[in-house]
Amino acid sequence: MTTLEISLNGEHLQTQAPTLQALLLARGYALQGAMACAINRTFVPRPEWPERALKSGDCIDVITPITGG
Image (cartoon, rainbow, N blue to C red; front, side, top):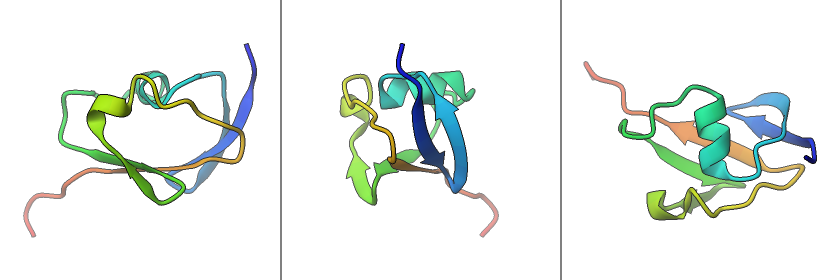
């Protein structure tokens, strides 16, 4: 497998995850939870997560809602 250099919520890391969904699972995100994802500042709809391939240099943002205002 290829090791990719990416940024996840501002943290630089290496991953072998080939897709956005694989990365989220590897990092412990509950996929059924309320969240949105963007790659390089472009929103990625949830149905595309399993197929959305990652590349070295990608900047991934995972946004989760905060309760309590």
